[in-house]
Length: 370
Image (cartoon, rainbow, N blue to C red):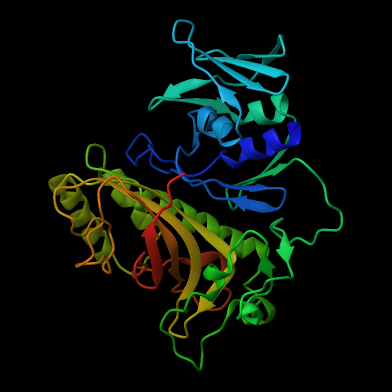
């Protein structure tokens, strides 16, 4: 029972910075991936965020109720009681002390209220629930361990590899991950030049730049780009957002800067608000033969507000005929282009291509309600 509670509670841990739109006060939001016991966790909503002290806070009600735990709310004392089996946990808003079976546990930050939800610090997971937590800085990933399986095979990022129920194009990839569905592997590749195109199995086995260090840098840049790109608010967007997005792109000229500035003007005029995240898969990269390396990524996006369903994203491939409804979570897979204008050892220079799009080569659908 304890392990089930710990494991499921962690499922709702970290995620993107939903609710933290980019502004001068929050200019580099970063999506945080979570890998628990070798499997990546994708979150439906109520994502965690990083506070001003650099600590990750998680939504406790969503988490606990996902487990089937009982969660209460005592408004008079601003207290959240949680019970699971015979264990009793009590949190108090804006207090660093948690009561666990009548004993006090002091955390390094406090439980807070945000958007009507109670958020608790990561240390709650490690100290109160007994999980081991590691942080990988290049890829902004939290690794949470509740068990050890010495026989399990993992990739260089600590992800479990599977050898059964493989996708029909399994040979295109260096390995197949246990937490990635075949649908994501079997998605069509972007338009390419057949002579020079390469699948990820070939890239990793033949090109020196495809090593853990470089790929970690690329994934970090993609996450930063996605967190800016898919989190927009007409109330707060400003030139700092423009400069931050521009910095994630390949710098061939300043012309794109003007396009980003025009998009910001449209965001304000059209009263656009968007929440979302982009989660790239490092083992799923495709070279199209025209100079771009496409990284397959999972995404979630919600269009909170707009006057016209037009050009809601900074994306030249934004659908003109498909109407994306307000307040609805959409999810899917997309291939995001990375490129460079540097020859030779280009590994560390790869950045988001000016033509990168959520809709160029993608699958999108309404998310299933949780």
